[in-house]
Image 1 (tube, each protein chain N blue to C red):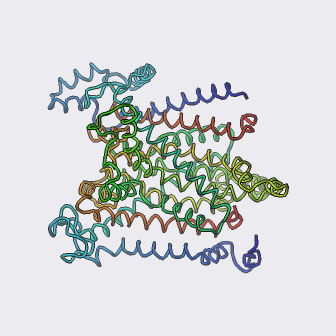
Image 2 (tube, each protein chain N blue to C red; image 1 turned 135 degrees about the vertical axis):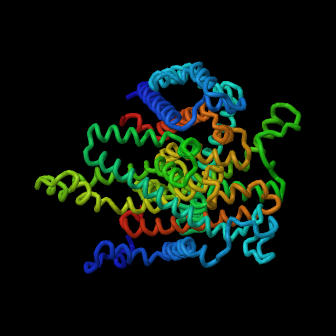
Image 3 (cartoon, rainbow over the protein chains, first blue to last red; image 1 turned 180 degrees about the vertical axis):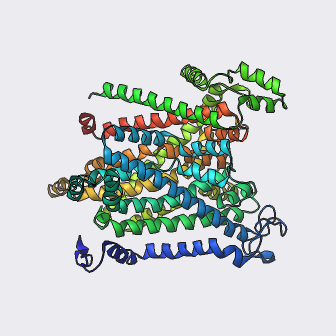
Length: 291
Length: 325
């Protein structure tokens, strides 16, 4: 409450402009955004800039970092660890983004329908949500991947289909709150179609917490994918961060770095995502900051 | 609603949830390519079409879907989860053997995370800008961002390989001979690293929430009144404010049970902990369908029981909850 003067709304700015101004003032979030942008840049252009084949056996196994010209050393098959981590960035980020996207679509749809229509629709949809909260998510995804094949789309599906419950609950509670507000009443009274009320009237106002949750979802999806591929439930022909850790795990006595570096990559990526998420939270929901 | 009624309603609801889990699992297995007959044939080095048909008829796989589903649910109600063709043992027995290890890991990690998390949260709420507070923010970020299996491997490298303070894998040392207490202590020593690894994820969550709710409580009127009448600081914090701040933390802990089990699967894989996670992993690789189904069922059961226990704990902490329902 003390920073009322600095946080006074600037009338000349749109709400999104104000949010950006608040985000800009959060140095941790900005740093996260910068590092994240760099990681995405590396994921897109890294393989062509670094130009070393991550799948080719180039040298003796377990050459320590810095020796023999390999910046991060070589793995148990003598492959360049740095090239593998760069190639893994692409897979981890693509799966993270698309699985998070899928769970946001499912979560928002279910939460919006439940919060808008209430009654038996809400009852059924929220029971389904609870059902998915009871399922141990990782075990369930492991079963899906094991039964239906470890292709990247199937892995994305397996992560997305178990991760949407938090989004659904948040969307529902926002819809429950907003549907009672006057402008929604007004558009109902003027005969706006329900679909239009859901998407054009309520959803835009419910977005801030959903955006924050979606940002965090990307982080958890990356962790989830890393967990699955650590267990070996991944496309064996595609390198990803978790898979590097999983396949080098037996050799930690000889070469701890083969496990450490890919883990650092996951850690930094998810850390930056959560810093950005926290920044978004403070920027989009300034009133909640004190809580 | 009184306590017994609530328990009854909860149990009925739990049974419905578990039935839904069974139906979902069974449908998934049904949709997946390959069936038990293929698995048996594979385990015995292949079979021709005729033999496959015979196996299918013997196990009722040629029956319509609903008949098979009904029979499966009926069997599960009698605690018969089928027979594992990979381990050559009834699935129920397999799971009962491994369940205690997982329960030990899951519950000890939850309790450790809650104790340390709540303590850190309370300490940091008293000095929102102090050193502990920054430390809580730091471990909260670490706990959320570090993959749990990676944390486990790092601890393993540090404390089992470099310093050799803790054993590298497993739950017992078979070479140790002795009485009950010596063997129990051996399990505790083996449990340490897996428990700390798993707790690190949830510790962060609980300390952060406790810090937030404690900050809220310390600003309330009743706390100010308590100070005004000269009540000792520690008594206010730990007896009055903490009691009110705990309720949301316990709710959160209850919601985490399915995540804790997911984490336990990974931790078990790192430390070769002989629990359900390791069993799930090997049976998935072996395509041992009945075992996988059984594990999913039992882990959902553990989550439901965990939720129920959280509910009870909630009532102990906050008697108002019973009255509201």
